[in-house]
Amino acid sequence: MFKFWHDPAKYAAGHRREDMAAIWVTDFYGLQRIDARKALYVTGSDVLGPMGHEFVPLVNREDAGEFLKDHKGRRILGFDQVVRGMPEQLDDGRF
Image (cartoon, rainbow, N blue to C red):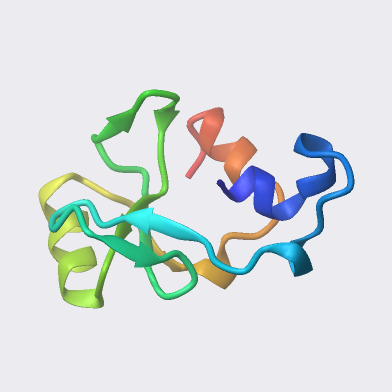
């Protein structure tokens, strides 16, 4: 999702960020759909997704802190803190 967000034209010709009305992610604990821009993301945890290391989305700071502690996470980031290049670093196991 973040790779697409940072360079939509690379993945879908002619698409721009401004064209995206909403971005949704699934909260790790509650499994509910949440606004990606309001979610918090834990990196560096022992929880892997289908593509390897993930930005694990959580609905609030309390849940993010609990997840970080329980799953050996490294950082909690807000949506705007995930800058260009970070998804590729995560792919390489650099948190």
